[in-house]
Image (cartoon, rainbow, N blue to C red; front, side, top):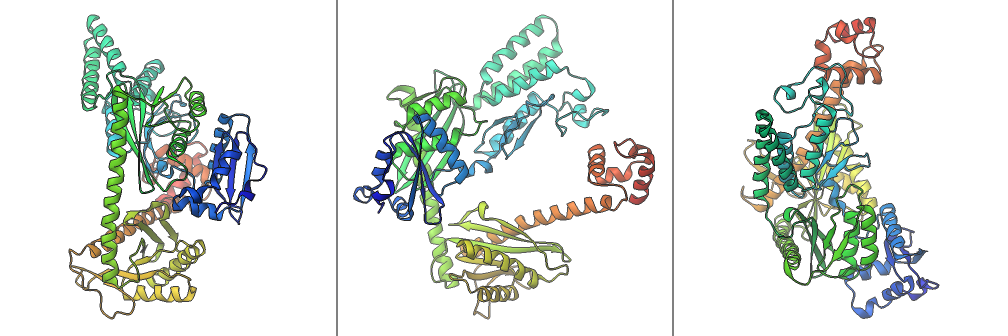
Amino acid sequence: MFKSELIKGAADAPGVYLMRDAAGQVLYVGKAVSLRKRLLSYTRIDQDGARSKTAVMLSKVVRVDTMLTRTEKEALILEAGLIKQHRPRYNVILRDDKSYPHLKVTVQEEWPRLLMTRRVSKDGARYFGPYASPAAMWETLRLLNNLFPLRRCKGEKLPPGQRACLNYQMERCPGPCIGAITPAEYRQRVAQVLAVLEGRQRELTRNLELRMNSAAAALRFEEAALLRDQVRALHQTLEKQVVLSRQGGDQDVFGFARREGQVAVALLFIREGALADKREFVLDEPLDDDGEVLAELIQRFYEPAQRLIPRRILLPFAVAGAAALAEWLTEKRPGPVRLAVPQRGDKKALVSMAADNAAQVLVEQQQRRDGWERLADSIQRSLQLAAPPRRVECLDISNLGGREAVGSLVSFHQGVKEPSRYRRFRIRGQDTPDDYAMMREVLLRHLTRAGAEQVLPDLLVLDGGKGHLGVAQAVVAELNLQDPPALAAIAKDRQGAGERIFRPGRKNPLALPSHSPVLLFFMRIRDEAHRFGITFHRKLRGRKQLSSRLDQVPGVGPARKLALLQKFGSLRAIATASPAELATVAGIGPELAVIIHAHLH
């Protein structure tokens, strides 16, 4: 139970509070109009029948720090900064944003580019997304590259003294490097790209139609034909979008659903009255009531500086601190932002549709959980485990004759990939092809750290046979782990036609049919570990092959190597260049050019 002694002296004023455990770690950061009233509400949790996650957190709290602010909006801003700093375990944190792709327009450059990225940074560029569907993102990128192509060459500045590339010859680049397009025309093209990404296709279509008619009237038929094709392509895109609001305009619509402590939120992006995209969030047993949970999620979602904020945000119910939240969003936009809870008409229908989407997310989550529980029970019976596994990890070793050896570990939680728990290991102690020694090194490193962090898996699967399983048994015994994972290994049979699963204490592998769900799951996680490891291994091999030959040339350091690669693009191109061509690179004179050419040949 939360002790009232922890909040003695709390002021009846707006501010932020930090709940800490015995180690001083911040468990939760919250804001309130009245700190005293908000903290007193936690002392009544037991009587009010709180959900288990809230009670567990409060049982760990040994200290509460408070910070006073002048207004509720200041408390909101301070809370956001403290959550970003401490990343508290019990706050709503949208950890999945980095895994979704964004489209980036480098408007800070003289000649902007359009590209895909998964990393959003404060570099002055415009970011659009995140796209819940990578397929939708790639379709948008293809459309823009076809309608309003921008330059595709790398680097913030145009490479000097270059002739037109193949993209220009194929009409996939306007050719700014050779002066084929003026800066004003290029900026107009960038503005058209931004209009599409901002959801202003109808406005852009009307402008293009006016320009097309004007060009046709002036007998500029080639220009008019190009504009006609752009208008047709945009019309085809608009026909695919579902018009949801007859009033048009941009708005974000939130839907909310709660089921047995789990919360799902669906967010519909309406642009010019049409559904442009959708995002979904699932929160396991969030603290506080629905209004506070939704307010915190809205704050976390719109916090990134690059996020596009519409003028109207529709909500299923009133949220805590709505006035301060609207004021904060207005400053970020900039421009007025209205948080509305519609009661009738089209807007109410939009909120109801978003709520239906949120409820469907919970139904699908439950179906996945039920499916995993059946599979986990089958794994327990087949492998004779003490309990059904929740977290399953798989370890694989990749090497080429012992060189550039790496270990790759993937993690699945309740049957779903857990990328945040994926790990890669560069094997340090072996330069010879000794799989057992490599496996032992990686197991020691991983299990030692996982044991210290208390995040050991329930089941650890090895890509290998009985020998690899024996190595894992020895490592587990050596570490004397408090709650050691169950072990298994998967390997192809001697004919290479089927798969076998080995378990400690069994002489022969498990006899599972080829269509067994247990065997198929083991093959899936083994293939995922192999994929994850082999990409890292290839990257290391490529990096070594690229660097070794240039690094061995006397007089070529990191700066000159970078200049060579920027000029020629690849090691093969450098090797085929003549001494005279090499000498044109900044920092490479005629004498060094001869040395480089001789060394590479």
